[in-house]
Length: 123
Length: 453
Image (tube, rainbow over all chains, first blue to last red; front, top):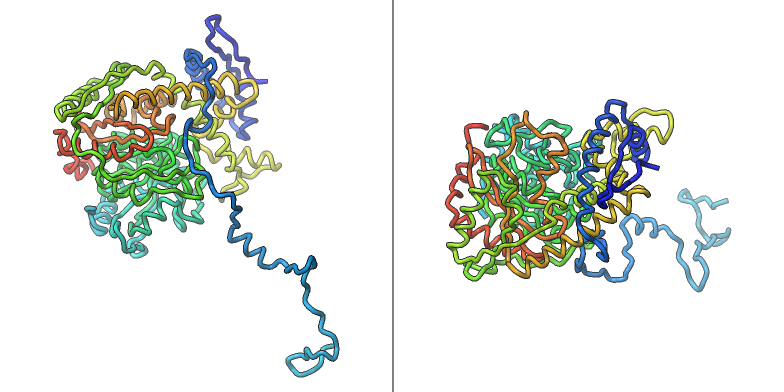
């Protein structure tokens, strides 16, 4: 668990940032960092969280969050799957179907022709 | 539209880019491919986080040092189809995170008005190239003001469209609910023309919308209501306030009515932005793992390889933002920070909707002062606070345009106007009206043929 989010008694959030918190967030972020870098980050994040506390000054009771832009009217796409060029190339190698069966090349048997280029009959 | 011409632009690049470091990659002149069409001969510079097939795409980062874009962004594709020519890729803060262009892994870009000063960021290369006449028009990206702030610092126009008007397909994602490609030019009419060719619904961007018309809607300011936000006045430096007040006088003299507005949440925009943008960035930048995209650190295990690659090839500012984003999305912080910020964003959005029930446009500063000196760039935290005036347009998805307004100590000062969603054409109408009637605009043409470069 990262540093606890507390309250200062007036409803404002307060975060106590430690060296271990910073290390934990580095790990979560898949980042490496040396001690010097982590110390600098600790100072930066202490300042950041003090500033972010001002979010608690805006009353948001009953307000819906906006994860994208609120009230954005975006046209809906047609419900048609689109096939990429790469997928089309792969699909072109698929075997065909007919009457519920896969269509396979007919096996050419001796006596039906199919001689080789040099005129010799295939084995 | 008027153009400088390819020869003049290449002369300017040869003469100035060594000093300014605006272009990270210039297309050799003999390899330029120009088409026929309404934008024939228009030279565009493209911020290096927008894909152009066959050209480098570094995003100003060591992580993409050897990466070449395999496809072209929709916006670029539309402009080249209309005849425009891509001249090169422009310097920027790493992954568009910064306000001074000092976080580029390829060295800082400099302001053409005074090379000891920053051009702003993150689209610093775009603004510097336009100001120094190294292209006709530049594309940038604006997540928290990254087109408008450098435009203001470099004395050019910078347009951030309504969210969804310009396709984000081919723009390297930073914070997807805020990112928009923007356009910078020396004249507002040029932006209008380029935007009309670049805009339009794009199947490949899920947030794309049917673009509004860019045709002129008004020819005079008579009857227009321009809002001003009382809380901002105390935050402006003297030179900016002076330009702001003179601009208001000009708008009044043109027949506009000035409407006072109150924005009680004006300071919280920075906190909302910091939480939302970093949360989205931490997810978007997870793809840079040392497996794909050309660079990789040596490490013993698979997990170490990823962490080591990210630790080594991301710059400090990108790490700061990824860490904060991860933090506010973590289980114990999600409700207190991310969810709360998303709610405050709704409050801010509703506030601005109400503003536009009372007025047509809002006049605002872009920055508190002129561009700061390269050796006086504030610490990261103080830099975040500089985005106070530009963030509302991103949080609300509303359009805004920064325009040159004045000169102070031989440096440009910009202001911006913001409109309701879909009213992009109105911004151009008023920007063009101001270009004609606002006295200080003559300096743009003198601009950056300036001694400094």
